[in-house]
Length: 87
Length: 462
Image (cartoon, rainbow over all chains, first blue to last red; front, side, top):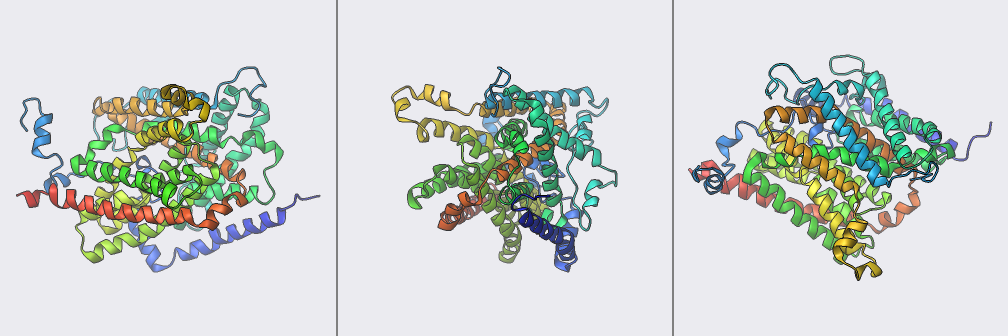
């Protein structure tokens, strides 16, 4: 059977990828620093590969503690927004 | 599209992408509404990611795996997800076939190539799901491009695969569906401090970086400058895809911009949290700084959580506000491009409005329509918000990701390494990215400190 030109290079690259993904990367995962980082992320249910906020495990809505520490809408803006003209 | 005249009926690619994207969105909303919960339908506590949708069973992606790729076929509860992954591939084939039919192509000629494209897309997902790769934010576009580039630059794409290689259509359809996720209502989540951090700095960095690329670094391709500036200043790969489509950037330019973004995202995700801890920065300011500067959303959350729960929450919310800018930026870039950059001499004598309309990428209108419709629905009430969230998180965002992934495989298969070489050798896109990111870091830190750290800080006020 005649293989198309470049088949050897494709097979070599495929073998290299298989070695990396199934051999090297799993070993690296056992490195203590990496294992600790991944364990922390898994425990907090973080999806580090999310491209957009909708892919996160938890939708990032305003945390309840934030308003105790930051004035999200200053008085003047809040007064403009309220129907009576006052906050 | 290829074979446009085969059946006598054909729609423009942008129109097909808009129609199919909006039809998919309508299907998702209708099915989710049909299966709405009988009780507690307004409870965010009960349904944190929106109402469950039956369509979620029709599509999924391989889950993170560590030792064997077979682990990717089981979800966190150890249920098999092989069927939804196979159905994800079927969705890619179905959307591509619908596009081929509307574009006047021969669907039967398209199917063998589409099946192979879907299989390669699935392979890219498996590579991206390896736990080390997954946790260091080397996202699926990188592996989709790598698979395509490897095959395309070794044995080349076989002839029977060619009719299915319509990456632009898949990405445009994905973008129209993506419009549903760009909810304008989410902008106000962090009030004025959040708006100032995300909305003042981002456009300044985007415009300055683009200008510097064109006039100071004299990069010949304006579209490359725009895509690099957008992915660096807004939100990485998703912004790069949207602006590349809006300014009709070449696929090689989008590939380069994504590569740069992912490379620096990993560096910033690893380096910024220890730096913030080392200088003793307030977690709210630190979180806002992370959210405004690191490109990819997942990397922002990972870096924020590495710093602490509070920083992680603020970082994710600032990033979400920045995410919501994509629609406006894509629209503005499309108008600027058609009206000023791409305007040809003959048309320049006509009316600007007519010229913009003639050359405007029409699928952007589908994207905006999806965004405005879902934003309106989302802000109509708590039940509607859960309805939209359920349809998006359970179905449309998954399908959008599959379509983008398939689009990147196509781009890789059609990209010649040699066409990337001039930009890589000159090094100027790299300089542009680094300089722009430096400006982004400085301005975002200044604004986060001003708003979250001082101006709107209750402790300071009282």
